[in-house]
Length: 151
Ligand SMILES: [Zn+2]
Image (cartoon, rainbow, N blue to C red; front, side, top):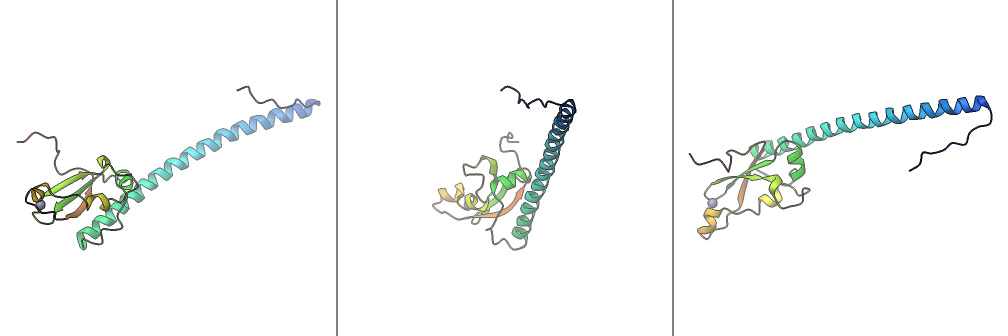
């Protein structure tokens, strides 16, 4: 793209004024871009904090009453808020399970409780039962690394 051309004013004073205005405009361009960047950074930090609080609020509700599970934060809010794992347990045999929310094959705008309530315990499935999962809390890390060697 060729640079924009401003028609050259006839008088020397007008040419000087144009140069000054162009310089000022270029300075404002940079200043506004930096302000926008700063504000975006602050907004992203505030969103992360809002997502974190939303997860903590849901955790408190689960701890105090265990319901209602709906509404719950969305998967991307949980990940963004630093709570990418959901602890659940089987309502029948109480086998615990940690769900890696980021690895779920659901859209990131899905509420956390939605896919979690459709998960079924493998142990009970083998016994011919399909008890629902009890949702416990969202956490920053899994209880134990699923890939850690047995020991
Ligand atoms: Zn079970």
